[in-house]
Length: 126
Length: 108
Image 1 (cartoon, rainbow over the protein chains, first blue to last red):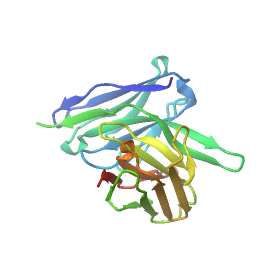
Image 2: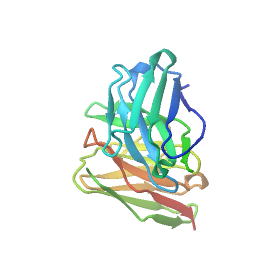
Image 3: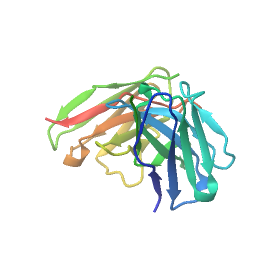
C-alpha cells in the first residue's frame, strides 16, 4: 500500500536550519511528483511548491523562495524539504503530498493530492 | 494569485442533518476545484475533484457542485466521523495552487 512517512518533530532556534524527510513506499517513486504543504498552528493549508521526481527540478510557490529547498534521493525513494535561517513564523506542520491526475473520457484533472505524509511539526523558538 | 474564500468559518450541525459548505474563487477556476477533509491531528484527505467527482472510496453522502467561481460541498446526512475541517483547493491556475481558509463542521 502507498505510504509517505515523514521524519519526526523538530525544535530549532531562530537562524538554524532543518531538513524534513518524506519516505515513499508502495509505488514507483519517480512516477509521481511530490508536493509540500505548510500548515501553521490553527491555520489553513498553504501550498509551498513541488518537485519533479524524474528530473529533480523544484518549483516554489510565492513566498517560499530563497530559504526553502526541495530535493530528492531517488535511491531511497525520499523527498526532502530544507528550510534555512529559520524564523518563528516558520513554526508549522509540514506535509509532503503525492500528486496525482485523474482522467475521464472527457477531461483530466491534475495537481491533486491523493496520499499525504503524517506531517512534521517544526517549532522555531529561542 | 486566485483567492479562495470559504464560508461559513464554522458550521454547527446535528448528526443526521445536511451540511452545506461554500467556496468562492476570486476569478473563474472552471471546474478545477477539489475538496479535502482534515480531522484533528491528521493529514488532509481528498474528497472531491473536478468540482463534483468523488475520489476513490468517498461515501455517496458527499457531493460537490458548481463551476466558475461558486462551489458547494454538501454532506447529505452527517455522520460522527464527518465532523472535521473542510478545505477547497483550486488547481486551475497552475503553477499556483491555492486553498481556501477552511470550514469547520462541528457538532451542534
